Amino acid sequence: MEPRIDEIADGIYRLSVRVDAIAPPAGFTFNHFLVLGDEPLLFHTGLRRMFPLLREALGRLMPVEKLRWITFGHYEADECGAMNEWLAVAPLAEVAHGQTGCMVSLNDMADRAPRVLRDGEVIDLGRGKRVRYIDTPHIPHGWDAGVLYEEASGTLMCGDLFTQVGDGPALTGSDIVGPAIAAEDMFRFSSLHPSMGATIRRLAEISPRTLALMHGPAFAGDGAAALRGLAANYDDRVRALLAAA
Image (cartoon, rainbow, N blue to C red; front, side, top):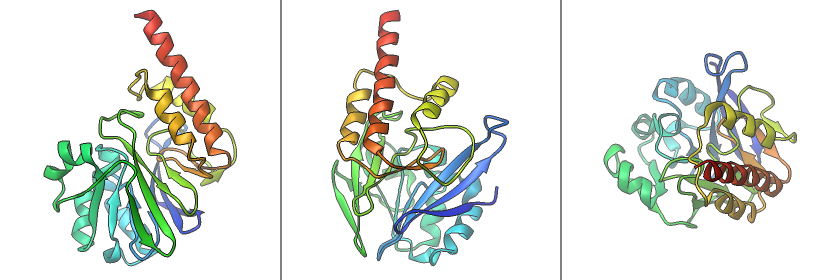
């Protein structure tokens, strides 16, 4: 479970931990993203039990105590289980999340009051790095779900979207839609509902150049096409579900 560290876009580092016990024999990766700037940001805290590993890995890139922002896709153990551990070692750090996540979970569960982000709100991290928060309720699951877009590098940190099993390169130009469809068939982790496709197609309008997956390799290429492909599959799933009702 030694973390692997790779720069997937300018100033954005993927800290990846592979767990062989999940979906054997392929295994499963848990990815966490550090955006360097005057105010460094961590997207995904990792599980509490992974915290010592991730703290050591992040410390190779910057002083841990200088971490400024902590955020994640939605309130779930692998997304934010170590939130308070990071707050304890980084005294200036703030958790930042959408209004729903703060209201239903983080105002109580975070050891320091979180910063509430409006849909579309931007945090300027300095050194040219700007991250935009985008609400994506129930996409792929969780009422409080959202994604983060780093504008300078065109990197969409897309949480559980495109989840796939197995390991591989840190950054790929290969198809990520097919493996994501296979993972959905295996885990059934998404909250299927009629607005899924439309919400994901709105993300495609950003035209990201890099997709930072929480579970799987980061993707470099036509992010809009990949998002539209995923949206089409979810549209098909919802139509089939409604037809069977």
